[in-house]
Every structure is written in C-alpha cells, then in structure tokens.
Length: 310
Image 1: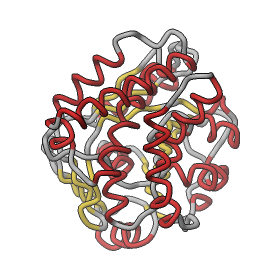
Image 2: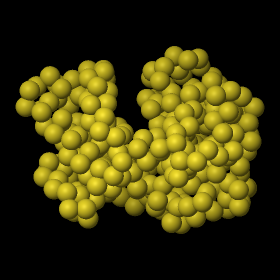
Image 3: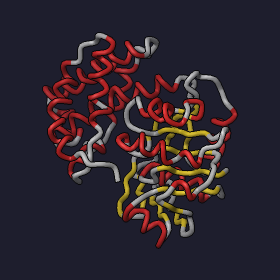
Image 4: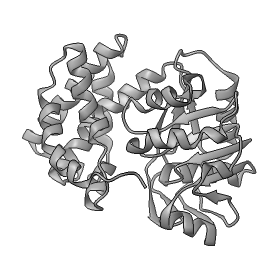
C-alpha cells in the first residue's frame, strides 16, 4: 500500500516506520528539525520490540508532493487539524482511508467536515512514545496498540487491509465495532489526567497517592463519563472502573504529554480535553464543575502559549 503519515511524530513515526520496514511505500510528512534529520539521516526507531533504521524513507513538509494514497495516518496535533485537513486534499482519492489519532473526541468530525466523513475512520492510540531527538522515535513500552473502526460499527475491507498490514509489520492493530465507545473511554480518563498533571506540574504518582488529589482525579473522571453518557447513551457502565484500573496501573512517573508541551513552551490542547467536556456538558445539560475549574485555571497559560500553526 501507499501510505502517508500526516504528522510523523512519535506515533506517526512509529507506526509509519514499522509499515515502511515491512515494504510499504510510506511517506513521512513532518516539519522543522525532525524533518531535516529524517531527510539527512533517515528515521530511527528505538523500541523494546526491536529497533529499526530507515535511511531512505521519503520525507517532506509538503503533502502535495506525495500524490494520491491508499491510507493516510492523520496524526497531527489537535490545533492543526483544520489546516492539515486542507493540506492533505491532494493526497485523497475517492477510496482513500484516513485514520485519525488525536487526543479527545472531536478531531474525526472536524476532519470529516473538510475532507468528507466517508473517508474518515476514528482511531485511538495506546502507544507510549516520544521524539527523543530529531529523527529518532523512542517507543517506551511493549504496548503498541492502534484501535480503529468504522463509525457505524460495520466491518469493512478497507479497515481490514490496514489492520492486516499493521499486524504483519509487528504492531498491534485492533478493529473495533464500537469505536465511539473506545474514544470516550479513553477521553474521560485522559481529560482528567491531562488537566491535572499539567495544572499541578506533577506526575501521576503524587496525585494518585494523596487522598485529596486522588479523589479529585476520580471525580473528574466520573464527571467526564456523565457527559459521555449524554452524548453516547449506550456508553458502558464499566468505563469509570476500567479507567481507574488503568490509572492504578500507570508508572509513578507517568504524566500527560500536555505537561511536556507546557514545559517546552508549546501550545496546549486543553480546548479539546477539559474544554470539550465543559462545552458538551453545557450542550447536553450536564453540570461540569470540576472540568470548568480545570479549564479556567489552564486557560491563562494556554492563551500565553498559543501561537499560529507553522
């Protein structure tokens, strides 16, 4: 298959790199020092599942150079969704599959409004990683799941083809017949984790072990779930318990990537985390006192860091 990775950062570089190593034509679309390093030295993946070096992987900052693709892994930051959606149009043909992989629950709809929702399949990543230096992706755990599926839950040949290719490349695709449940299940925990670790500038360990912050964390998760049930009425009752079990399993030093963005002076994604909880709660008549405070407390920092997309 011909595959483009729009946003070849930690996630896109990892999954795209594995597919390229297995023989697919994969184009990395990146920018800045990361793009320059890939062009000069290739893409390197460091992983407990095996390292890889792709010295000749095609890389560009201009999607119009790539041409039509079978699959686009759409892995840009939330704040870049709209501009990136416009940029990928030259790569889209009538049967192109686009898999989203952003934090939050709104990116697939926002992308679909620009490129056509029939192209878009929502995805959820459970894959820890980082750009340890330009051109180098460090995959930090065995976990490398990408969950995706058609919004209406039906099986599809296009999703199966991508899943087969990913599995053959050594990663762990999971096809879901209830992808909106998957999106919300991650979102209710992620929105609390992101806001609390960023606002306090603490790892999850101290927040989890202090009784007061532990209860706040749990209550923020439950609040997000109540909003989710209003938006997706059949959202399973198990979501809160499943999320809390996941929180309990996380390493002491774990924190959200939004805290890394804050520490590096990069724009924050709070509008698509606690911000969306607050907005959707207001739309559906669900009170959101905790996320309203988290959102308001983060907003001055987020506004200071907001910059136009490069």
